[in-house]
View (tube, rainbow, N blue to C red):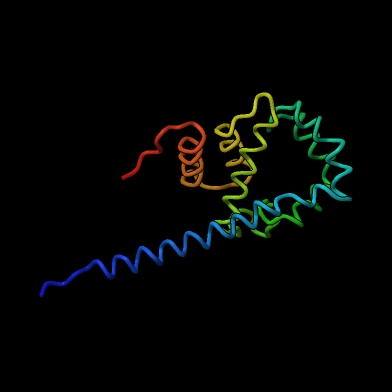
Length: 157
């Protein structure tokens, strides 16, 4: 009798499905807990003052950087409490997990919607310089944004 690969393939499919659901569950927990530290002191007071200012600024501009500098004590607390920020980690983005990266990327997307001139594609390029990630990771972010939010195929096999 010839070998039937279907049982092993079905087992493989089940293992991949389980692994994907592990990631989905981790992301669900992140979605439910995302940035809750902003809702209480000491962060809330700073974000109450600076969110309208940041909203009216262009991401990465000198004005934006000045607002971040003024907000530094609040941001230091926020980064310490929220691991989806590269600043949370000793070695920045290199110490992050895939789950951290996905939450961070979604956070960037949501942040672009707060700015009149927000653009996730531009943010990815600015953040490449800010956080020192590779061109390869920048391409993955760009491909993902294109596929999820702009309805364009990211290419591939």
